Image 1 (tube, one colour):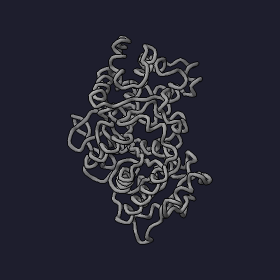
Image 2 (cartoon, rainbow, N blue to C red):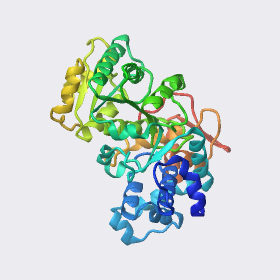
Image 3 (cartoon, rainbow, N blue to C red):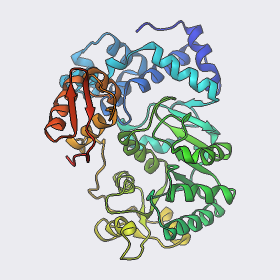
Image 4 (cartoon, one colour):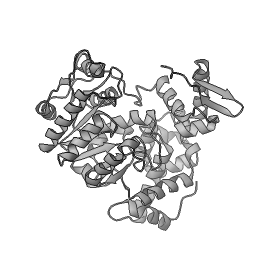
Length: 408
């Protein structure tokens, strides 16, 4: 991939950034943006090589497919990890994709910030090499530098009236006391928390799993527009990126990292909110859970957090505020999908399934490009999915079978 001229880079990036944009900063930012187009969220190998070499030099290594043993050793990357990284990234190494994402951002009035910007939320550094390389922001970028104190209110999409009532009351009272609300803009608890924060005139931030130019869910397009109007809508993936299950799981780590504490308002036994809770605990962030009726399946996940994982019982805004000044909960072993220690077959199966269609046949290389895995790894997973009846193959490629997703 050839690099554009510095003047061209400045012209493409100037509408998206705050402050001076000299040639050096423009080249560095362009390299960071290119990386964001190559990797899936939470890619620790990419995080280590960029941290060791800087985004430009690290990108040069990818473009040339080089593997300097000294460089890899300094970055703490094994030759195998590096080769697997190249197999994931190089299929996406297209300048047209990089320029298209920038063009969408310019048309949509979206900003981009990196760790070198004053608006960058320092709390994200706790994610280490899994931290995002940049953030796309729709709304006021300064919101991210004045979030604290903040609490993430998360929970079930299929929320009950009880859960939404608690989320609304808690969010309204918290913002009335100067606390910002962080959530994911989903239906149910997330949406209730955002709406209450807006109605009370407080600050709220929504983290999306897809590009910030694509409101998701579509039914919350107006809500997301209102959040951007007074706060910020944020994503680590480029504009025009579609949300997938894998990206939702990785988005949850940003919610947990941005907030000073996390409260799960209502969650089923296998709710994705437990994934957010796992990230919060792994980051030593205080964690609370709201109890519900013992007969309610919608609260089974909250009861699990309270009984098994040392979450604090939270029944009102006062108790939520105690999380901000109290001790951090004990670390526990909730699934934190996407971390180095938690990567497994289920994670990669999710990514492959996300990249497949129920109707269109797709070749292995196309699936690999969409999910960010190496073609050889995708082929191995497709073979297992075929055995389980979750994928079918023909001369035109592969597609998903219309049946339950295998549990892994």
